[in-house]
Length: 285
Image 1 (tube, rainbow, N blue to C red):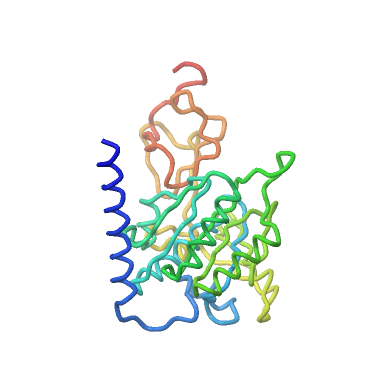
Image 2 (tube, one colour):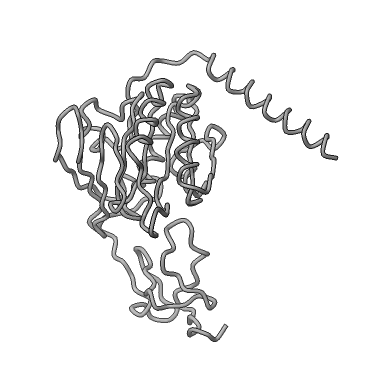
């Protein structure tokens, strides 16, 4: 039984290698930058896009758009028939949401190492291989000494930069403001409620530091059709059996099926109940 499993694993690895060789041999035009797919963001960058062969940091709080912007860049690479990789340590990548943003899941390799150091090691190997146009590394939710957020060390940052240069890949670092990293450039993202989201070029060797744009959510999520002017509805503001336009915001103290909903994100929530349904009080389910 064990020998059969081992032979099967070897066959899968060989099949993946052959697939990568075929994709690398396919004709494709040379790229020096990878566009994010959001024109206003690309205009902030000195080269008009994210530079290949370098590491770039997307820094922001949860739900700031950092992961979605990375997915938009990955989708751009996939339209050029390139391969990409995602080091998903926190296990927060949601494939259906990625596909909705244009990501070709068949061209995206996802690895999920647990430890922070293992995420860095995996990213170095992937970027150095030369097989991937973009390698996204989610460095959030890592725990360091004394329970503090883990932060990329200078030697680790240098290893990633060297791997990006050797493999010609773009390494995108997803970080939080509490634990920023070192990259060629740093984009700071911030959610501004119904106004939209902002992006500021916080670090750059090519100039333009301090440039900032505020854009509506629909530019980041065009497939969803979000409108910056759409009202947000609270559960208590909707009459039983009534329906209305816009987005549904459930108060944080509500409980669904005995489980709190705080901390859940768009695309990862359970199906939303009808607005007319009464939510059970805590502890009754």
